[in-house]
Length: 392
Image (cartoon, rainbow, N blue to C red):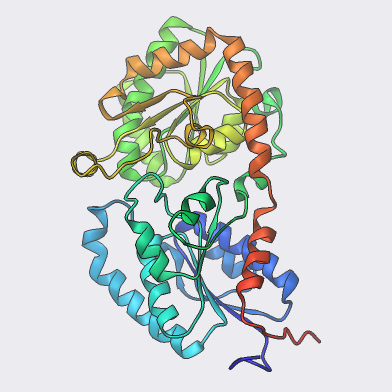
């Protein structure tokens, strides 16, 4: 039974930011079905704590994005990783599960694996699109990768890394939204006038680069279609402050901002204009046509372009999943009010194109629904050293 014979299994988890906390909470619940007496320790957020994890530190401590943004936080993050390494080596969990946050977690996984603790990484970094050389680091750091997208295990197989497809947890959760009319009723929107959802992102830098072009596009479209409605879900208080400030420049814009409720806003919309990333996948799962916009900070963009760090033909998840352009993408200087408005109008003027897209999305979404948390728990249980649960 190994060194832990005679005790229930202990799972070490380290989750980064809110999305990792959500994944971690669902995973803990699925693992608890298999191992009712298991303990869960490490770094998590409120959701993971609510399902019984012993959180030594908060997931928010890892929520740092971007190549340049990380530099200022590096000493603190390195101290945190050293502390966690010592704590995990003392606790000796049966397996260490790093949830997302690859720049932090992969190094920790490597250290713990070297210390004899099996390590697994949940959520593949986007190595197939950005900085492909990282796959060699992943091979050194972890025993296996759990992947949210069906094409990812094949990529890892080419590099001799064990990887398993779990399906995407969002695909499991975005199933019971109201229809368009029901969503509009809940948000107080008019039932028959066209509605565009604007999602500029959730991080301050991202929002600062995208918000004004999105509002400018709405202003153009409203002039062309006076009855058109706009709804903007605000991810947090910081985004709310940015929206209120930006709207001063658009005093005539008839826009309804709502706190949170992004999925409901998408469901209410004819078309979604969103930042690249999870929002584009969410719009796909809600089955709405979209225009995807992406602006990196200038230094990060130039670095990526100069060193050819980006390998994917596309940057939006619907196009990456389909391996062809299903939805328009606007990048860097292409992100202008005029170009966004033009792409929105193209969807409005082509209902047959919308219908064809929605049929394709339905098929793609079905492939993503695999009961991700339970599938992940199944793979983890196969990697777990043989350990009795000692249920009463």
